[in-house]
Amino acid sequence: MLDLENELKVAEEFWDFLGGQGAYNELLDCFEKAGIELRPEIDAYFARFNKKR
Image 1 (cartoon, rainbow, N blue to C red):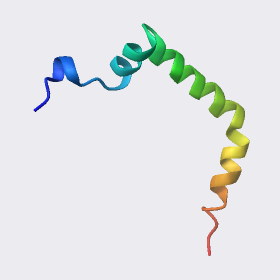
Image 2 (image 1 turned 90 degrees about the vertical axis):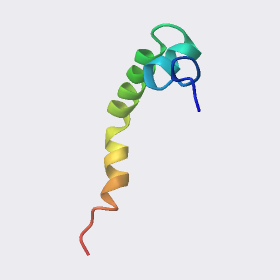
Image 3 (image 1 turned 45 degrees about the horizontal axis):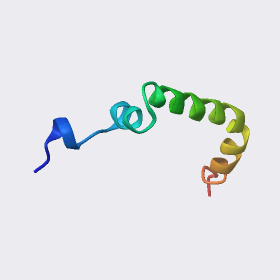
Image 4 (image 1 turned 120 degrees about the vertical axis):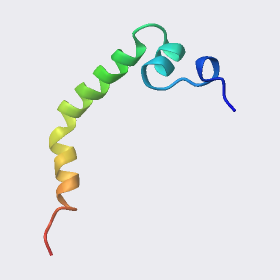
């Protein structure tokens, strides 16, 4: 039903379409930096679910 070449965009193609050339890689970089900075907080949050009962 979709014209895949003209109507469906995912991942890099989608984000570069919205934000311009390189937007996808910039977005990935932002998520990586946030993940590194927030790693202790993220680990602490998920540690609550890893406790053995």
